[in-house]
Length: 268
Ligand SMILES: C[S@@+](CC[C@H](N)C(=O)[O-])C[C@H]1O[C@@H](n2cnc3c(N)ncnc32)[C@H](O)[C@@H]1O
Image (cartoon, rainbow, N blue to C red; front, side, top):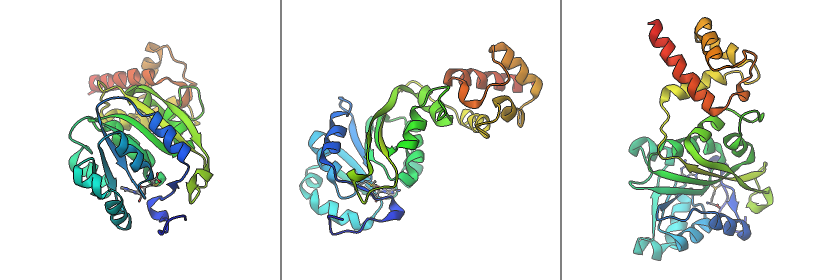
């Protein structure tokens, strides 16, 4: 470690040290008047760039880092350019429903152990408009995958339906961090479609669809739903019963869910 602090594995601390990557993140940021929210400012290297660009609100869980950040950003904390909240961000979401009271963009080098959960929360959060995050490449591929790609899963369906634009902007190698993570990282960008809200039932439906990703979708669905209803829906949507879960488009998942629900209600 170049700094006087030992990175804590339990908080997913891999500090970004490559200045060129920090600059590329800043250049990729959406141009609007939204507040910036950062999760896990760490030692403040990305934060330093963010506060130069816009007013920033950050959530950090690690007590040891809070005192470092308070002294590094004493002026910005004083003049309101920077706000720091010492808490677990998932608890903050649980308690308040949103990380900020108005429109915001999430820009962060996320702790990888909860990266998927954070992105799903940010997609659900009505005030979050753009998500620009560094995460493990494997997870970024899942969020950005399209149908027929082997990585296409419920995460790809959710990201596709809830966004106007989403994809990997660039990859970041382990040596850009201190300590280096074991895996390749990527910058994922999601521009949300603010008019779309997925219901909890749909998320449960997707869990069933992808419960055994390499089996036939029909088989996964028939563990829960009536086979005759499913056959009718497949024929209405002009689908073949041998389809695997990754071969159906996000929009067809949405249509199938509506039909499954309508069918269930008729059967009651
Ligand atoms: C990958 S490091 C990124 C640090 C810094 N932003 C950088 O780019 O060098 C992840 C950061 O998230 C913080 N963190 C981990 N879990 C958290 C949680 N549940 N809530 C808020 N911050 C968390 C860690 O303490 C750490 O500062």
